[in-house]
Length: 276
Image 1 (cartoon, rainbow, N blue to C red):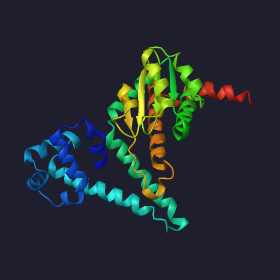
Image 2 (image 1 turned 135 degrees about the vertical axis):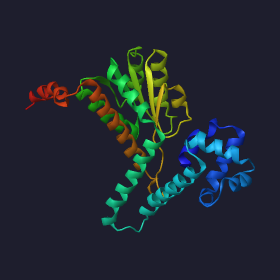
Image 3 (image 1 turned 180 degrees about the vertical axis):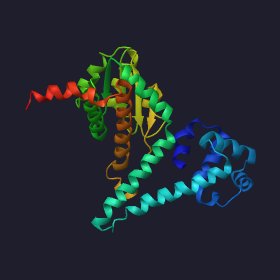
Image 4 (image 1 turned 120 degrees about the horizontal axis):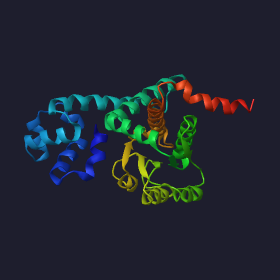
């Protein structure tokens, strides 16, 4: 839940930011406090606290405390699962638990109705362009391969120069999916901006809602960053989250294109038969 506060923090009013700061700094205390106590400590009114939790979480104060307690359990679960002294046989269970937490967070932050709308515009697109580099590039390539299997014209290249050139081919009948955890990656921002200028719809997959890429986008999908400190050598859980989202979109697009998945794959299988 603290992740939700961070996502919307820059758009909050000054008074709401004061409440948000108190939630972030005293989340463990709030679980055992009533709404008036929180208001007094945050230097505001109980009505303001009530409006804040409704605006940010869509919940009453009582339900917010329950969700907050559960989310703290999740954070502690992820962090606790990844102690350096873990025996190797404990690591698979720790990874699975962490993945479940990330997937749950994604579904809490992003509305399913918005994800379904994205599948509709992908299914209707003439061409789908994907931009991403590094770890995000691996995710972009995986999605490109999946969409091609559905018969969707999809373009992705690891070469950022060529990707920028590709963006000059975009039209208002095309859709762009740009993947960048920070939303600040120049090699993703430049082609995304050029594609938008040519009328393409832009879907951003980012780690936060407030960044340059999300500001450009027509649609945004947020992948919360829940990396335990011990694993910050690499973006492990955010990558799991990105794959989870693109698989959701892939299945959604497939269902939009046909009620029979076998028919979608017939042409693809026939082409590959020539290689055998």
